[in-house]
Length: 413
Image (cartoon, rainbow, N blue to C red):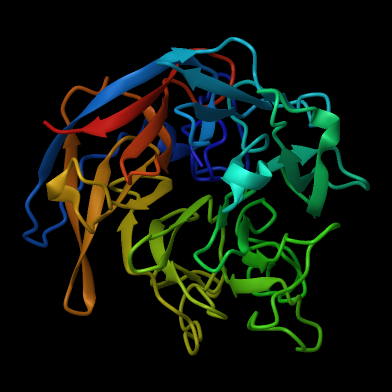
């Protein structure tokens, strides 16, 4: 991801003087500044502006809109903050730091990463968060998806009131995934990265291709039960021997952010690449997206001659000449920005913002310029409000450790 959290091992620039992470990008990235995209598709560039909502956050990772005018903002270290009447409130509505691992300043991919409001939130007040806790064994940490409930008579949430839905041990501290979203079918979708490290070196085929683990997967579960979850009967691998039935799709490296288009119902995911390629996928039931056999549309392991049979290729990819860590976004379905209508908006952690537009059977990529956004900010995520308008999060550094991170709304030029 991005900021510290960034989603990806190839996410953050590594500061040679202070941070050396063997799992991240090759060291040449430290000296490399990506240039703007040159799509070459003939699509027109779109120029827009941003409206800053706040600039006093520490490593924002996700947002939610509870429907009363408030905006909830997740901070990676474990708090959910609130913007109310245009002002960032000091006291969080939920503080999970006592339950979580200690999140480092600077480069960090673990933490409080994702939130999803229940489709019936207005009546049941339930929401779901993805966060990192200490391991039960000798793994680096464990990632948890838990349900909390906002009291009808209070704006606060008891951190001890949560109900753990599921959890997964993680061998390394990066490639967490961390996205949780409800689909149009009412089920909860959850992304897990491949477990971390470099090249998915977990077993003979890597976690991405291993079907008895949740790592490197997008899951689909039913949380409308009193404890835990149930597996929807139409999940693609239900009843298959030695395959986890929760799996919806597999072959991912670090699907840090995904979203559903409210109109087409398609599931778009940005999957962070290894050394050379970033990709965006349309995620379909039971599909294999290739990692670690492939990085984007290119062979990775083996470097040549990989067997591509049965692999679903990305709808777009870009090389590390243009960026280093894809940040998945949203299809725009709002009313204020006609130029973005039906286009998928996404970015790279290093700053370029793009859109995808389908032409025939292909998706083409065009540039988006945000005129008044400060330079040299890391883009760490997007969000969508109930009206379909889009927001983005930024960080002037690689992760936690500063309170100068911002939320911007994308507006007309």
